[in-house]
Length: 267
Image 1: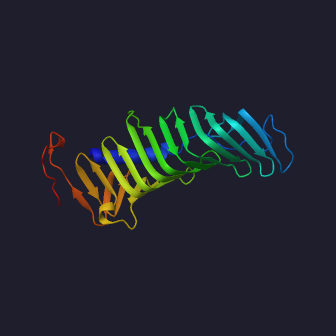
Image 2: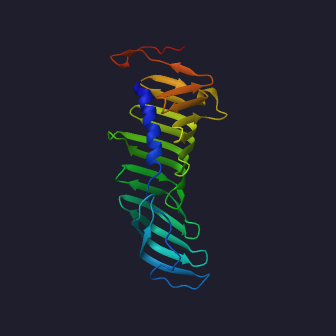
Image 3: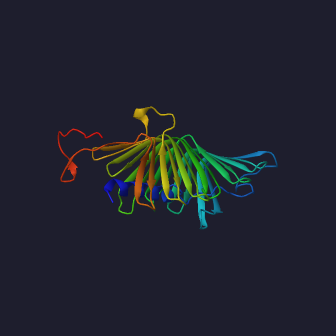
């Protein structure tokens, strides 16, 4: 199997694991936070530094979560807690940072806004975005606005994914990225407007709907280029495919590297 194919498989495997981090279930509970007093339908305000501890359920295990912020506003009706200022949510080796975090206990949903950063030291994972919305124990989440994800593979090699929108569903075991999607790994760059990964089938699909010929999905590595209307990375079959106006540009190699001054061969 070629280096380019191995890269594709590693990208898909990483997407299924690293894009479903195990941290930060938003359920805080139905009671007024410690130090706050309020009647039904009213808001209780606590100014910082604020600390809120809870027992939450991240993915498959139960570990404590600590939330700190400069200010906390709790509304008993609807059971909504808003943390503002220097918000930090810690659980095990994971940390979520944002200027704003809203937690709704009734439906188990949380929204972090105004520029978020999620790190997981155990996975070597970092995710940044303008907004992160998630439910329960991150079983379903969406990141929006200048989304950047970086992680390390099993050999500690960096892998980066970028786009304007990223969504994962741990129950359906799928993930999708949208708008200006870019994947970088060991000299390989894949670009498209949409990326869909289905873990059950172990297939990642790169597409660019309504794209111009020069904006179609593409994979570049070592001077080689593959484009098509649709690119498929098939993990089970250990191959990738280009469908619809498929095109390849191959640079002659010298000792496994592109030869200097060589023109690309175009089929």
